[in-house]
Image (cartoon, rainbow, N blue to C red):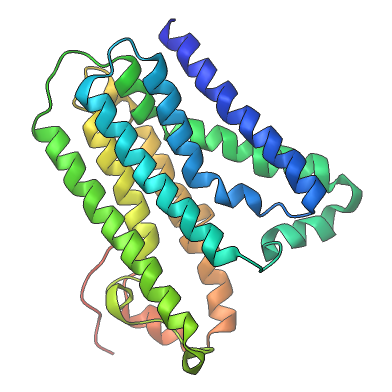
Length: 261
């Protein structure tokens, strides 16, 4: 199978799952299930590329393993965090706004859009397997694993610290500014971006992998300007009285020691 054919196949697989999830969401009246698939969906695309690769080798196995580790951890965390909470307020607001048209709107702007974004962001993992080249594992792969591990640490530990903080009733209405959250207001989003720069570094060790640099850049842009930092901060400024103080002392994204006020 050609590279174009393999990429088309992976897109079709991802889109088919999204279509099935959309149908389930209509029955459940809960579009939030799309978020649970965000991480695992990348693992699926990596696995499809691996299955279609002419010679995935050690680098292909490494990329699949790392993508699955990141994606499954994220999916499990979101499923645990959202259990029993009902539909996410973002989708509930869309449902009220669009009324009878919500089904078709959510298919295009939620499920369809996420299918496209998953496929685009996952291109380094796919291209590195479909056009693997003959280069053995080396320095770029080691750098990629280091970036990935650092990112996964920030993401997983940040999520765990925030969950413990929220579980304490004494912290109701307070701002989380401890642990990793002392150095960045969004350690989980920073870690998420770093994970994908790490996967890109591994892909860049292949002859054509470096051409996929737009994919981690897109993920970073989404986390900073669209669905991550920007979206959450608009809400927190209204719901946390001390958030302005936290913003004044703590980096929004890249970790650094807090500023003095």
